[in-house]
Image (cartoon, rainbow, N blue to C red):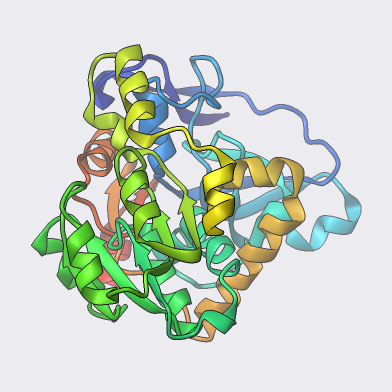
Length: 352
């Protein structure tokens, strides 16, 4: 019998989760059972805990999208070669558990890669890879803005854009996050909140404008980013962290929508600007092969040292509430990883 952390109520993390036994359903064709070594935290988990993630199942449920572990069982005889392999991959919720069922198409063989690095390359890596691949190499020498640049997605995006020859502007909200980007080496770094970065970006790009902005915040930053785009530029929206700054229920949502704006396609067409929303869970629902492609691509790039995650922050599962607190605070850098077992070995690996 497996155990998992169920989200049983909205609110503070100390009261929102309960560790209890979890019964797995029977395996279906193409599925595997994984004994989980560690799981990753994603901002959608924080949104779900705050009751602001519309795709979350009804309470109670086990959150979590990315895991590392060993394959215990498979359903299909032709998949037997996966048994005993150490893998990283995705699940459609259920990741905060000791055992997880997922599709064989949603896992990758990682051999001895650390859990912290492997989990950094799952949700965050695949999201970054999907967006970066939508920027043609013909834009070499152009500028792209990356919000939350010291986060899991942002730090990987900077590296992928660099490979394409794109000049990057890494936006972080505090000076202490700048050091986290040392090995990522963005072209420019700006320290700014949500309201005062427009002129800083203009000072860098001049009249050229941005070929792309990668935005995990939304809210009022959307209007600013659209103004900063050059004709032919694209705004990628892959998060809505700004909604958590308000505390008045439905009025917060309405205010968030008001600040973000509602856009007619006609002005966008006239300026040849685009807005693309990115939700890898939705992509996985209808195009699982695309998710599998980018998962494999991320690990290939990692092995070729083209994609190196910034150091993760690790927690024991009994510290899940602390991990949620840190992610929600906006003060974290890199991936937040939660282990079921002892942390001594993992902490020693991080020091190497």
